[in-house]
Image 1: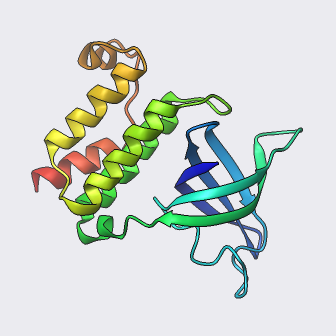
Image 2 (image 1 turned 120 degrees about the vertical axis):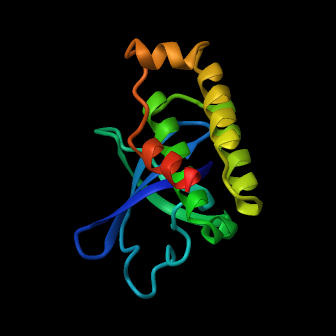
Length: 170
């Protein structure tokens, strides 16, 4: 299955917990055992916003699955050219995480996120890009009027949005 890394944190001394957005399973959390060891097969494969082909052993007891293998397909290294692009990628990932469920396919949302990262890989983030991403994502979620949904407290936008918009205003 294919996934995009949207979060990672150290777990114990040598492992990582990696959060993904995947087309087939939506939000997915995995543990990459031994990922921080010098000779790990995961080294260089699990950075933020990397798009990877992954093999996961699904847990029968919880939401933390075991990552068996990951092969990076697209690093989106161009994101790192502009701070606002990193903030936009962080916000887009957080927004998708906030409106999707674990173990529920999000094909269109995944494709939208991939396209947004591809765009930001080559061009600078703008307010227009943010507005278009939000509008399309909420349209996919069945929210017609984003401003009304936010004002009516039906939708809570991730905290990363304010920092992104401040950076774009410069």
